[in-house]
Amino acid sequence: MKRSVTLALWITGSAVALPAAGTSASDIDPRSPEQVFATRCAYCHEAGGWGTRTLARRMPESEAILLERGNLPPAYTEYVLRRGLRSMPAFNPSELTDTELQNLAQWLEDRN
Image 1 (spheres, one colour):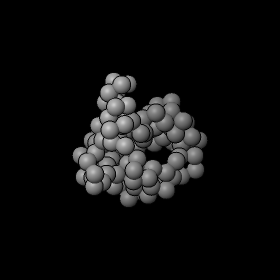
Image 2 (tube, rainbow, N blue to C red):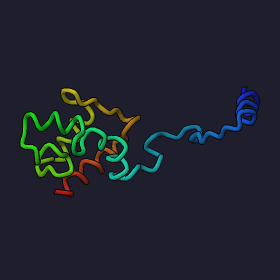
Image 3 (tube, helix red, strand yellow):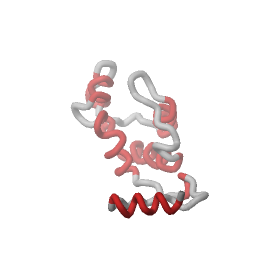
Image 4 (cartoon, one colour):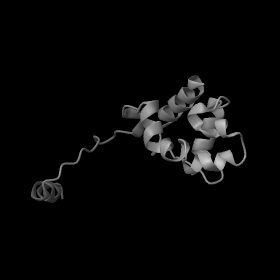
């Protein structure tokens, strides 16, 4: 099997970086909070995004933009990201590690 995978990769010219056997998500260097926000949050939570427009229906517009929100305790952010809330999906640990989640929640609080 190993030989056929190597051959298939050689033929297609593909290169894939795979973690070593026994490597868990917690062993991989976490992404920075800025990277996580840019790749997972910004699409919906920057000005004009779906999440921002949805939040603006039930709170002041200045608080609807996540990066400008002043009342965002890390425990609340972590809870919502793991469980989801209304139209916002939950993010499981394979999408967002516990370390990345904690760092993002703290970064959001520290910004305001």
